[in-house]
Length: 390
Ligand code: NAI
Image (cartoon, rainbow, N blue to C red; front, side):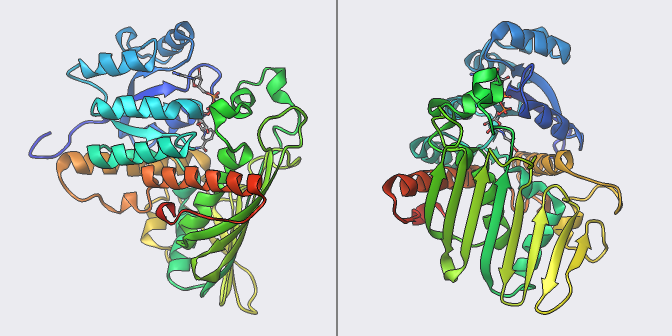
């Protein structure tokens, strides 16, 4: 710090994300795009030897490659040049103990979703974040896309009038067969209730859809009614979920999450219908939104135009026509996390790069949503969502 100004990159640590893992690699790419982080330490794998091998291949100093997260907390706490923040890229059931250990030792945290596997842990983690003053970001990826911010801005500006209907879906095909029994690492823990939590597809991808719908419309959920199904024989958790949603103010929604939707890769799609118009965003065409005014022709609004909102432009890196996508969206979250952490270190208010940044509060809301969905399915009734967590 010079004259109160933070003058270096944030030192990033990582738990999970080792050899053969998925999301850790995306975090590493995203953290580098704006040159605000450097990865310096990690406990990259549940298997210590494999983790050390991975660390060496990624130029992590051997004394900062740790056998497990407890050793990492102890080792980093003892250093002068300790990490500033840790990214937790492990299966869901480990998020809470890992996040708690790092927060208790004074570190900031970037945590994967769903934030925890139980509502009790989600409440405890959110309260810990609030009490400790540590930053806890949760990677709801789709809120990093510039055109999602544009849709949010348009809804808030009244462009589609009062929101009446929300249709949101996240269909995937990759678990349409029992790949968890054929050695697929990612599917194995996702189908184990102890590791994934109570909700299968609803916890894994339904939470993304729920966050996206709330992020764009700004509406609070009142109640829901859910029907979960498990199509692949022997699977313990849902692999398909239909959820009817009732929002404050009368808007109705329908959320579909599926891991057995053959033909869909990452087709998260949001459609919002208001009293004056409608909006559609589809993540496989993420550089545009469709906007239709009452009785008007559909208009395609593309990323990069001059008349888009400041929050949209701030998340745009290349001129229109050059595609931007998933990595850039993830990097936009990392840019917001950096600003949240650095502004606190500098003792100033964060700039607008953090607008709408998902934190432990959004993490808690997501876990509460999963709980309500499973409760509704199991009881066969509509469930009022807990007004404390919407
Ligand atoms: P994965 O199975 O590919 O990777 C998990 C990694 O964590 C592996 O390297 C494993 O060795 C390591 N690990 C497990 N327990 C550990 C422990 N106690 N200490 C250290 N390392 C440990 O899993 P994947 O698909 O990367 O998912 C990880 C998390 O990311 C999950 O919470 C998942 O929901 C979330 N995710 C989020 C996405 C997003 O769009 N934000 C997309 C995909 C996953």
